[in-house]
Length: 155
Image (cartoon, rainbow, N blue to C red; front, side, top):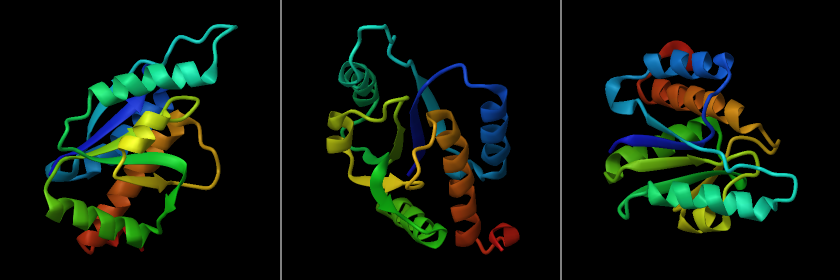
């Protein structure tokens, strides 16, 4: 099993890149996610949110192998405690197929991406800006790994 993060948005602010890098370097090689950034749809004054989501969704779906286990990060998804996320991570590892975590753009994920997902996961009932989601997600993956390995970070 390999972890992948497909995230809409490029050219992140330095605090996002630095925060992500800090937790990524703490993870062991087998748990380091491969991050692929996808372009945000060009937004104009007369465009529709559904159109932007559709364009971004097409990019995401084009990067998903048929065998992938897909986890969509969605505010309406299931909220896990850190302990429950750690248990999910252990299941992902045992199941075998690569896991793709999807982070939508400013308007979220397209209905097609949500339909493709094997599971939906919510980091918070709050709506978080998509750059911040990357940092929170990688920190929670690190925290979940520490629980799996009895590392003192979680305490």
